[in-house]
Length: 415
Image 1 (tube, rainbow, N blue to C red):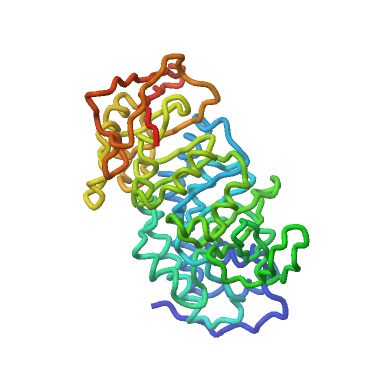
Image 2 (cartoon, rainbow, N blue to C red):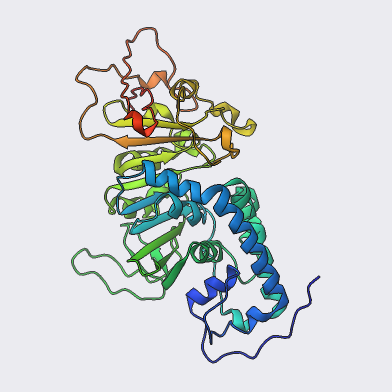
């Protein structure tokens, strides 16, 4: 057990959000920061060594290879990046989509808070650092957060929620934090800084909504990568199920952002279920590309005349707890798929992982009419079942062979 030094004298100035993020991430705060003395504590130094080691391993085994994949295949990108069911996983968001000007992450996990660390006792600080090590452990080991664990890990202590985890990932990916504000949404999808009192809007007759206690509380973080342009990260704590998704204003907020790049992984196959139809439809309508593992949108929802699909990795089917979401057609789509050099999703081992890259096309891939599946062809998992009464054509396009990739077969669906 590491000895804890006495609490240092408090500075008259609170530490900046950037220094706080660096401290929590096990990186030294700036000189003369109020947190500089706390970083001399042996418990913090042990925390810093642990994060140095685990992030170095993650960089070598995963993140460097994710960035190589992004550079090679994700060449046409939008300014907005959407990551639903993400929790605080900014790490993979920025690794796949490093140049987005706006990131929008969403999950059930609370936004949380990070108080002035210099006001906390060494025992409480040490507990917060240890909790961060535990709460980031599954993502850094398996590439995803374990939902059940986050229900307790992100709700303990004065430093809690997704915010401290976001701080860690921002700092460890070399970002500088410039501004942090808590925000809330109204049903129109308009947001305000949570501490500000809005006046009545004369034009739209919207009522005053000054309370931060909305159905989609969030945080807005403005940051930059070195001397690069400023970027914005939003995280909203909200229920994405039908009804809640619309009432919270989050659906309206997303609709205002325009074409986006979307990423989905380890999403508990929720987008296969009927009561997540609204968020599924929004992603299909607003996304220019969707990069996902098989826990994302079922293959059947990608229409042949709108999407070009490219398969990477190996489709081994869902893990046992999600076995009923097996998609028979995915095995055919992944025949001859290009390999990926990293592991991702529930099948996190490198040679078992899968990614499907869907690009929306502005023009049809074929002049031939393709008979769509009927709604009756869709089974409980959202995948299309064969129908002997219909003729189905497959549209297949070969990618440039120098890229070493193959566009997978696409199957039409109409809902």
